[in-house]
Length: 114
Length: 114
Image (cartoon, rainbow over all chains, first blue to last red; front, side, top):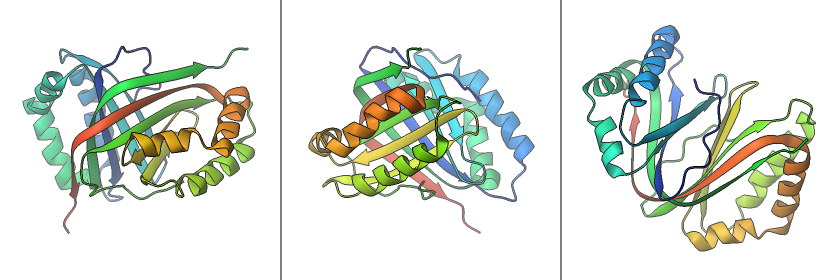
């Protein structure tokens, strides 16, 4: 999982917000390995700008993918290995998930100065 | 922190993605208390639709706020108690953060069927 913040992208761009709860009985190692592979794979998509991911232990997970445009989101959605992972996710890992695709017109940030 | 998924909102709506890293030397109890108070306060904003939050221990935190329109986001941004908390956050708690405001035109979800 990435532990860097994505920042400094010039709008417009898109955020794909993926929020999920895992099934406690799912194979967490297989899930982590697939998540690692998906991170590798999405980085090859033209227009992919980065992602951030966080999960409260035993609670919610939120992953935000940043994409330049709808075409880059569509390319990722149509990736066959990604589609296989999604099917496995629905069958084995996720208790539930939601996806929200948003067009970003403004963003800002802050870095603490020592 | 909410551990429920936000789902079933009819587009269009807005996601405010807030991603952050905490300073390890910050007062975590005071931070948690302020976060709890902000969750209480934002719920009073007309057009606020819910939020989700996750934090990897020692790593990234991601909070997604869902709002009906730009007016509801502006009302939250202009709340004075929220502004005080933001100033304290910048001064004491956050190593860095980013905010991405997106207009959602489509969303979908999945619930695992037993």
